[in-house]
Amino acid sequence: MADTPTVSTLFDTIAVRNSHLNAAIEAYFAEPGTSAYPIADGYTLDLAAAVEERLRVNEVVNDVEADLDLKRGVMRTAILLARAQKA
Image 1 (spheres, rainbow, N blue to C red):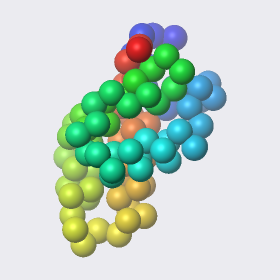
Image 2 (cartoon, rainbow, N blue to C red):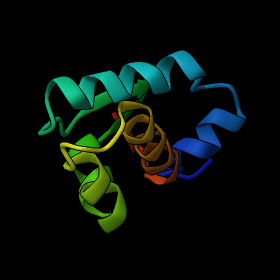
Image 3 (cartoon, rainbow, N blue to C red):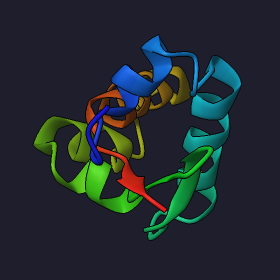
Image 4 (cartoon, rainbow, N blue to C red):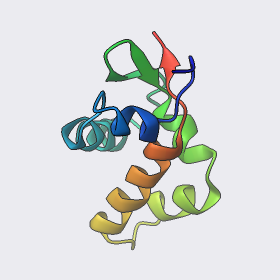
């Protein structure tokens, strides 16, 4: 596995589970500037960058009128597509 796998790759190998994704989403909503979130054993994820890198995700997450479930859904996608860094 590469040193910077996508979170989706870690999810496929069961290193990341749904509970990890849900916790990461909640961590972002609690502190949007989170830059070193421990997503899996030995890997961290820059949650702020995961959102900022995807224009549509950034728009939805910052839309005060957007439904919370929609925000969680786009965040999940952004996290799965993001690259984790070796801790």
